[in-house]
Image (tube, rainbow, N blue to C red; front, side):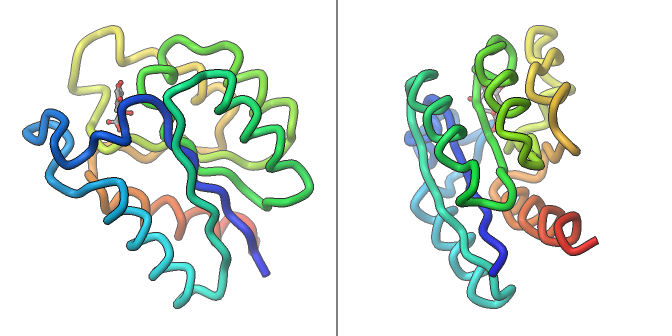
Amino acid sequence: MTAILVLNGPNLNLLGTRQPEVYGYTTLADIETMCQDWAETAGCTVSFAQSNHEGALVDAIHAAKGQQDGIILNAGAYTHTSIALMDAIASVELPAIELHLSNVHAREEFRHNSYIAKVAIGLICGFGAHGYVLALEAMKAHLSR
Ligand code: DQA
């Protein structure tokens, strides 16, 4: 069965109360439920995790090798700063999709750079919580090519 890791970075544990005008009112727990509901219908397994710590995210990416078929990564602010996360994705040689709730390209200039995009198969941003389902669909389609 296709196994997909959905990995969330810093401050995403605060979704629902964090700048709802930017990120919406859906909590991370709600998003996990959406992902698990999708997995049941799609016949896939979804592992869902969040950390505020860069090294823990690197560890989670390493642990995915041999266990997961693909990674969906909302790296939060680390997207724009973390060569370590970029290297981790490149090292495990798993397809990765970069994901953001907000349209980072319509926001501050510093959010326009992404280290993750350099090693991702694609990028989904700007669709709020629904982006997680879009990313899962895209990963499933990619893996069944
Ligand atoms: C985010 C966008 C990032 O720029 C920001 O630092 C986040 C959330 C998003 O999902 O829109 O923490 O990744």
